[in-house]
Length: 457
Image 1 (cartoon, rainbow, N blue to C red):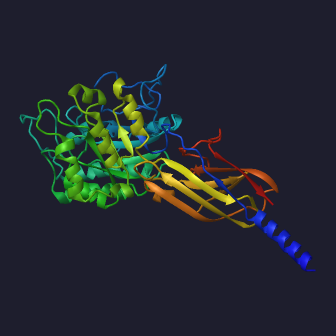
Image 2: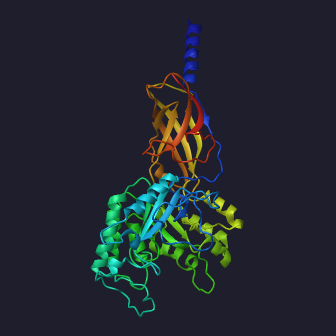
Image 3: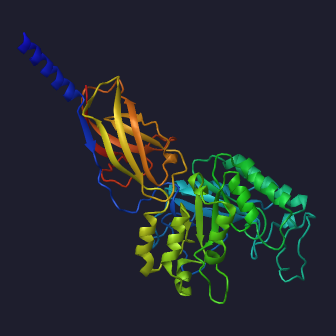
């Protein structure tokens, strides 16, 4: 009897051991440039696969309809985000009559080109006047025709008429586009040239603050980016939850000037404003000062410029859709591998076999090799054959570095017994389809990543 008991115990132990056997998967990391949603180098006033600007200049006037795609390959990095901006005169040629067809077209073009859209609505600049109806409305003017800048009609932004009319445009835009799945971010644009909030005709702070508040009323779901140039506005906008963007990234001191944004303003403003951690919850976006070709012409050292962008935890970069100099392309390729987020599955541990209708233990070790989190929600999911199971994690909290999931997942009753492929993906909640490329091998044509097999009993 003693021998029989021992044999029974051994048999039970072997069965239990087989049942509890675990599989450890260590996916192989890849080092390609990954074009992922909401991050990377943007196209500007253009979409993916469209011709870039041919020299060191670009257009501030955004397109009002579809732009033809290039006939052949385009010498520009692949891109998931298009950045477009338009002047007030384009969007509201008559008071209260808005040309939403312009933004509708841009959103549709972004979708067709596999991109999302970042936008800015701008009041005016030196070459693009305020709408004629506004200038003739009796609104107050800040400058005179014989002033040095008198050729362009600058509004008195303390005038309630300016606040009312500009706010109406922004509020209507918010009602129409806030939360649009193809709208990735909106710049906060208030007064001055390009709406950047600086210049000789700034309103009282209470007015500037009210103009900022309009955006947070209009856009409660779409991320907002605060322009960098006016310190109080920058601090206020980021304190309300906005990210930040600056538009002279790379200025290391242009010829004939004794001032450089990168050396004399930007790093100090971040420290003064206590903005070092904004990137943890809201995006940072940078726009090149001039163009990369101009940087080379001006004799700038590329290394410190790229390094500073990484220290700022940048997610998107606007190069004005101009050519990257040939000698700098490899540097920019390595740069693209570091900006934004970059997810690597280092290790997966799971049972060799699981039971349908039961919970099964899973352990995952992920690594964000980028410099920023992902700011839009995506669902981490595991697939057993054709059955998809969400993993209860918030990937927006995966800051640069390590993240771990150790818990249980439900194995659906309907999964038939047998051996099934095991796969992982980050899904778009809107479509339920894989949306994010991972920095590992094993990607299948449907976007899922093959991790081997698992047996369902």
